[in-house]
Length: 120
Image 1 (cartoon, one colour):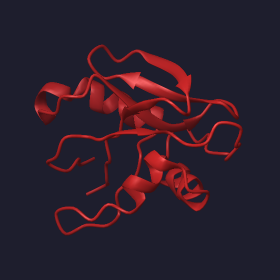
Image 2 (cartoon, helix red, strand yellow; image 1 turned 180 degrees about the horizontal axis):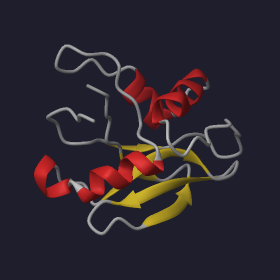
Image 3 (tube, helix red, strand yellow; image 1 turned 90 degrees about the vertical axis):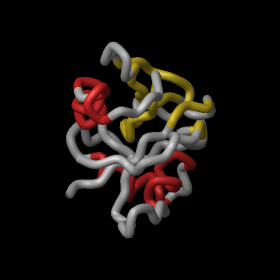
């Protein structure tokens, strides 16, 4: 897993009231494709990111964010909270506290950090 050298932006996850089917706990890439197709803001940012010569970035799943939380010191990035690509309901999505690894649910319309990753 690889993250670009940049501060993550704070963006909305997506549109409240819209169900996307982005529920794959393991594959953030599969979720991001579904989310970008309906214009979800956080996933679209990653899906359209062109950084370090790569365009295959995606919004990580809960499991992938857990790996980032465990590796936070080694990766040297600084957001406390970040969106996952997991939809909980038509109004909520999953985020994770990267400082302590705890997951949470938040309204899709909240602004939160977006960390884009890619498989190298």
